[in-house]
Amino acid sequence: QVQLVEFGGGLVQPGGSLRLSCAASGFTFSSYAMNWYRQAPGKERELVATISSVSDITNYADSVKGRFTVSRDNGKNTLYLQMNKLKPEDTAVYYCNLPRRNAWGKGTLVTVSS
Image 1 (spheres, rainbow, N blue to C red):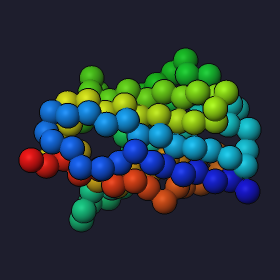
Image 2 (image 1 turned 180 degrees about the vertical axis):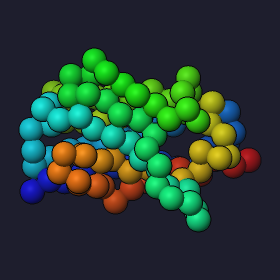
Image 3 (image 1 turned 30 degrees about the horizontal axis):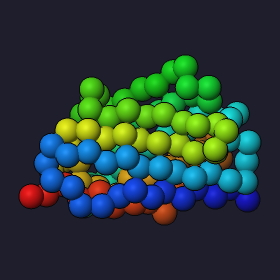
Image 4 (image 1 turned 90 degrees about the vertical axis):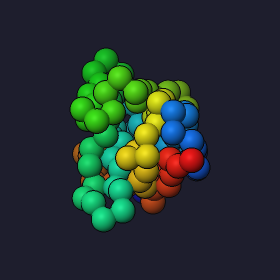
């Protein structure tokens, strides 16, 4: 069965950086596009970044463009989200998503605060 496990969240000061990881199993990771979503308190879940199966296509929400970078290592079945220049409004639970199977991880909390 599909399993997606996110880790790497935590508390960071504004302007800081974090790298999130998502360990995938139960499917052929290298065959599927993957997404990162986030959900801030009291807000709807929003799409943050998308990456194609072989990393040739990436897309970002306007709010993170130029600050976040999505990548993947198909040899390690792992998805990444490098987050730089973090802002308090980036505070959210971040989720890994396999859209083709509508599969989700449990999320990892990122808090940006001084």
